[in-house]
Each structure stands twice: as structure tokens, then as C-alpha cells.
Length: 492
Image 1 (tube, rainbow, N blue to C red):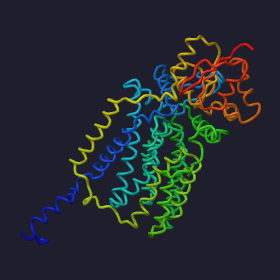
Image 2 (image 1 turned 180 degrees about the horizontal axis):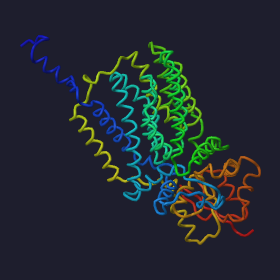
Image 3 (image 1 turned 180 degrees about the vertical axis):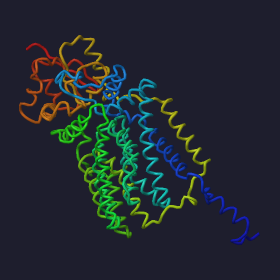
Image 4 (image 1 turned 90 degrees about the vertical axis):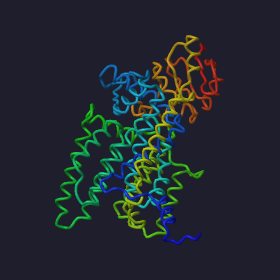
């Protein structure tokens, strides 16, 4: 039997291979967002333990729990012995309360799931925008290139919880610029939430003038003054929104102090510049962008090019900012790509409700796996056996601890020498610790341990100072394993 191209059988097969058109009244974007959210949950849940792989997570949970217990916001340090009583604020208090609440509900698995859900929701917002305005191929490639940059920074820390308001804020600015109007005042709520979640809200304020310029350039000459005044008023309102915070202007001082802290780049890996010794997500994204510009007619406006260059610079300068390029870069590029790849057609490429529901069930199953196989804090940040040995021996005095152990020691009620609150310790102490543990100067070792209150050390085995302590009179090794080494001070 022969089949003509117009036969009913061929038509039926084609109907199976083509998604049905969406009903005009249906929100296709919801289907896309559900699928993207579930897909991100699945991918992140496969390695849920990585979300707990940062040494700062325990102290964020501890501070959040203290706020929940006391109903007060800290104003001075009570967690270290080196700078106790110094002014310090919990500028990211809302994130810390959320993480602490999750921990009390379900332990570390709940903390990991909360983090994964926040990241997945941010990816869902980006995917909804991309698939609504680009062809499926272009949207898929854009997200596939950008996703690894952000996924590598999904950690149970405040910055991940701030991704949702950050994406919503940026998208509102872009939509307003494209529509040649000022952003809606309702989006100021996103800035309020962002400010209380993480100090990166300063980036959100910096984006306002950029997209204001784009909106003004798109407007007719007669409307530019009125539009510029509207954006200026919006920027003033946005600054005022950041002051809806328990510490008011204090959150600004704390956020700026972290940016300008000396010595942090050489101590903390996430503040170090990107390395291209091996091919990674950032290099692939940059090479893909160069190839796109070289082989297509893609043209980016001067404003958006400036924003992209700023994001690329931040990603190259500091590892931690690669996630910003992965999250915000696609939003900036969607409109220029739509001119080349053509706009998306929701009616043709919409997901059915059944497919969206199926993705939702898959995401729930992946989340359930996190509960069945609960992640835990890595021992290289939580040296429980080493601390147990110190307590069993009754070692007196304060600890000179490794930086990565500080957060966990705080959660165990042990005052720290240093921890992730680098803005509290200041550049001088951070530099002293860095030079001392790495033996970078002749007298750094002596200056680091000169304080007579130090009775023991808790350090990672790979630090250069460990070998020198083994040979230094007045110190003896008490305990060692693959994660930590303990030395105690002895009478000379």
C-alpha cells in the first residue's frame, strides 16, 4: 500500500510529532516555567550535597536561629574571641532566618532543598522569558550555555536565595526599557526583599541608570524629558526601598565594606579571578558569544553591550560573579537574539498541561531523593572528630582556626579566630591570617600565634603552617586525620 503526502495516515503521524496549538486563554508560560523548574530541581538534586559544601553555611544557619530565638538583630560580634564586641550586623538576616527555619523543619536536607528550590525558581523565570520570545532552539541553546555558570554557585548561602528577586528586578527593568516607560512601582517590593536577603542589591541599583538610558534613547525627543524624570524618580524610590531594612543605612556600609576589603582575593577562592587552565562553562560561553557575533547579524545596542561587558568583567575578576553572568546575561541578550533567530511562537511550541504535570512529578521525585539520601555537611568543613579530641583532652585557651572551619565552630559554640564574616575582621587581620598560615613572610608565623590566649590550633592538613608547627618548640600535635590537624601549646 502506498501513502501519499496528503493521506490520513501521514497526517496522523505528523500530528503526533507536532505539539497541539495552545488555547488563546491559556498561560503557556506557566507550562514552560513548571517544566524548567522541575528540570532544574532534578539536575541540582542529583548532587544535593554540593549545596552544603561551603564553610559559611553553618554560621548563617546559626545566626538565623539566634534571630528566631531572641527576636533581635545583632549589632555587635559575640561569635569570635578576637574582635568580640566590635560592631557587626546581620545584613542578610532574611536569608539566614529562612535557612534556619528550613534546618529546624528538616535538618540539612531541608536546607539543601530550600536552596535548590530558590535556584530552580530563578531558572524557571529565565526559561519562561526565553521560550516566550525566542525559537525553542535559540532559547534552549542560550539557557544550556548559561545554566552551568549559575548552577556551579548554588550553595546554601544568602546569595542563592536572592536570585529570584534579582531576576525579577532585572526583567522588570528590561521590559520597561523596551516598552519606553518607567518600571512599575510594584517591582520595588523585589528590591526590598533583595536587600534583606543579600548585599548584591547594589548591582540592582546600578542597572537602573543603564536601562533608563536605553528607554530614553528609544523614546521620541518630545517624551525623553518626561521619561527621564520618571526613571530618576524610580531610582530615588529604589534607594529608599533599600532602607526598609532592620539596619537602615547600615546595610549599605556593610555591603560596601565587603567590596573594598583588602586581602580577600588571595584568601577566598570565590573572590579570585577566573582560571582558564581548563575549559569551563565561562570559557565556553565566551567562545559561543564570539562565534554568535561573528556568524550572525546579531547587533546589540550600546547600552546592552555595556551591561554585558560589565557582567563579563565581574565574572572574569571574581569566580563568585560568574553566576551573575549566567543569570542576567540571557535576559539582556534575549531581545537582540530575537531579531536574528525570530520570535518564539507559543502556540506551536507550548507544553501541554499533561507534560507540565509530568515534569512536576519528576521534580517532586528528585526532591524526595534528597530526603531519602540526605546530604550532610562535608567533613572537610566540619571536623567533628578533631573537636571531640580537643574537648576530651580538656585543652585550655582559644583556638586559632582555619578559615573554612570558622562557620562550623560557630555552630558548635566555639569562639573563632576568623570566619566568613570578613568585613568584621578587616583587611589587616585577614592579611595576617593569610600570610601566617601560608608562611608568606618571615615573621608572619610568629605574629599570627603571638597572642598568648591561643591554646590550640585547628587547621587543614595541607596548609604550610602545619608542618612548621610540628617542628616548633612550644607546640605539639594532638590529633590529625584527613580533614584537620590539631596542635596544642605546651610550656617552653
